[in-house]
Length: 248
Ligand code: PEP
Image (tube, helix red, strand yellow):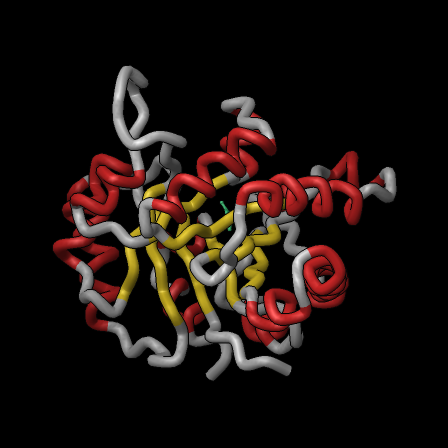
């Protein structure tokens, strides 16, 4: 098996204020984090500079969204160039909340990913099926469709991490079992080998996301095709450190 660096992302979503964010940064800065795990914190745009200044450079910082062009008349949007300008290295794109609440299409998300990569950001590219889709037996079709949209625009996958996040597991406390997650991750790797290349299939990191906690991270992390996590709720709590250290 190719050795892929374990990568854990925290997605704070639209949570926190200057005070609570300073406290979380203090915990993370002082914690004994597994040095072999790559850690990335996705924080609200308005706090990105604060977080970048408070965290050590060994911890990456991510925007939770960025637009598909570098500047212009796009009120309310931020660009990859702006993220880079304030020292941010990553962006999370295609989160299910962006897809469902803000009606972002596969195509728009792929265009955003293409532009972010061209501007030199690393991208956490999210995918995942809804409960209805899973129950209809469409999980593989949905993740293949979402991956194909990315693949239409992404030619170099070096700076991409895929986050498989079943929508029914996000923020619900209903984690996919390690076997359920592994099954989809293995399917994604097979799809990548067939549609992109065996090299990309072996080297691309695939995170699992959906109600990961300090309690369930270790079992999930034992699965061969799970290369880390994207964590919402638990990334705001001290147990995030246990998730980062899940492979220890
Ligand atoms: C997420 O928002 O990406 C997520 C996985 O949330 P939670 O961990 O709270 O389910």
